[in-house]
Every structure is written in structure tokens, then in C-alpha cells.
Length: 171
Image (cartoon, rainbow, N blue to C red; front, side, top):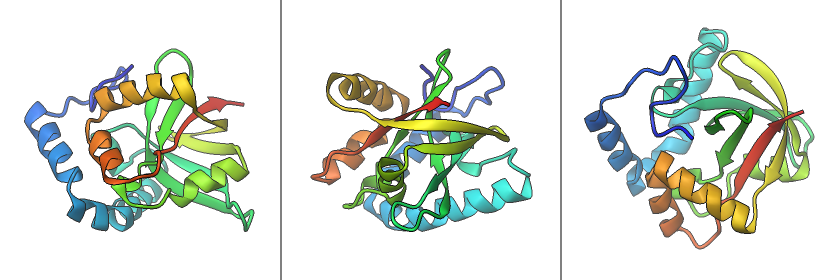
């Protein structure tokens, strides 16, 4: 599995000091208040301008644009998200951390209601099915996620809910 910012064959290496600084900032409560509005808006704009080739947040973590039907509306909802690609399996892990905020992010409810979705991965649209992870499988992936991006531990410590973890597999 990938570690932090070093992912994939064409990965750019982010200096360790920069990566540590970003991890430190992303663990703060102030970041949790601002990031849910700021990060997705910037990602959407850059993704649109580059025709799906670039996600700003993917300079530190791999990212996808998830298109899932709304849980109640049934309308398509596009959400830029960090992900952990599972090398060799053609699947991706999404974590509903919501930056350590109290509620589950809306996209997780959408996937629970409508698990068939689509991701845009490196400019390509890929149909996927989402599986909510439980038990031992979740525990194993959680450990890998903490190696991948340590601030997830801070996010979980901040909330009483269990952070939802999904595996997306190609349809």
C-alpha cells in the first residue's frame, strides 16, 4: 500500500518536512472548521479547469472525484475526496473522516443508499461499487490508513462516531 504522498509510478515526492507540516495543520480544529468548504471548492475548480487531470489536494494524497446519487434526491453529487488506492487490486479506500467533525459526511449516506457510483481517477471515469467495511476487515484497513495519513487518528479521537470506511471496487 502507498505511504503518504509517495504513490504510483509517476508520483512526485513531497519533502518530508512539508508533509509533516501539512499533517500537523490538518489535525487542528481550525482546519476542521475551514477545510470542508475550502478544500472541495478548490479541488472542483482546478479539476474542472484541467479537464480532470489535476486535483490540488492530490499533491499530498491521492484523490478521486466521487459521483454518487443523493441518498434522498437521487440526483448526482460530485465530491472530491482523498483516497488510498489499493495497489494491484484496482480498488480504492475512501474514509468518511469529515476532517474530524461530529457528523458523517453526506457522501457516505449517499453510498449507503446507492452503492453503485463512479469515480474520476487521474482523468478517467470508472464505474465502481462501494462496500462499507466492518469488523476485522475494517480494522486491517484502518491500520493501513493510519500509516498512510496519521491525522486520521486525530480525527477519530475527536468524535464519538465510528468513522466510515468504504472500499470501492470496479464494476
